[in-house]
Length: 467
Image (tube, rainbow, N blue to C red):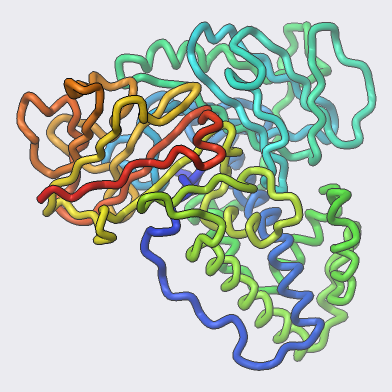
């Protein structure tokens, strides 16, 4: 079964093309309409995540991009240019994912000895916050057992098992393992198979736990974000109310959500549309559309990103949003599954050093001075995408280039990356990132960025047009 969803879409820099955004308000609004908008923005990530969970778990079998609840599923190879299911695919790591339900009992994630290989297994609650990110940077590369417990769970865990308290009962694990090209697949696949999920009730036994059935009658052909955007206000708030019956409100939000009772949205209660008049339903649907436009606008203008030498760089509040509800909603719209910056930062650009759009009709160089390569604790890369954010077919089958490539440095210790459609010649081909003949975008991936990246003192070099 083919599953259409946008998994961990790369956070594309604010300098990428913006689509037209409708005007939010063309007439005065009432207090109730404002509350509808605020409630929509507040609950948007919750609804998107819930639909994503349903789509990814609507199966009885484990596949590369789907699997039943509480079971891991893994991508075994990098996508090629024919892959169009997910924008901004990754050519650095292979994914291992799972959706957990810990409402009945804890689930234990067991990690193998990873040797010297970098990995990260961030866990997102249903609000899209990364509440725990085991991996090389945080917990090391040795064997570990992490018991993910629900917000209301009380009990005793086995010896040697570390408790991880989840804020919600539904959790999305988005694991990534460093993969150094196709020749590395076999080694990484072997490691992927050694990650295990075990319900506490069968820990230490050979018992096979019963599989938890996913949602029925799920649309697996339409991406979750599109399903969310198609909802009118009534459908959206009906689903949100159901989720708020099952999902704890963060303590910092409790005062804020009290106002939602004005529109009939109260945690723990159904959303009763029967209490609304036809005119109130029209107002509700209209205000929900306006809120949706605000979410799109926030993503498309990227006010939360900074422009560093033409690259859009996001360093603050991503992955842990606090009470910044509009930012949280906009990232759920355009970059669901975002990492915290300490795990990865993704500068992105589609313009050259003069601000003109990148195109394969020109030749470019990215020049790193000696000692000014991206400061990272793990590794870095630059990935080429066409203007639709997909890989570009090329004669050397190279979609990304970085510190694990066979790069040739200049005599003074500096480094040039050649960005162009045709080969720069055999002597320079080791440093060539092939471009399409038309428009293209670049994403730089910095894994385990050092403080110089996080505080903004290191900046990615401009993309210099040389012809």
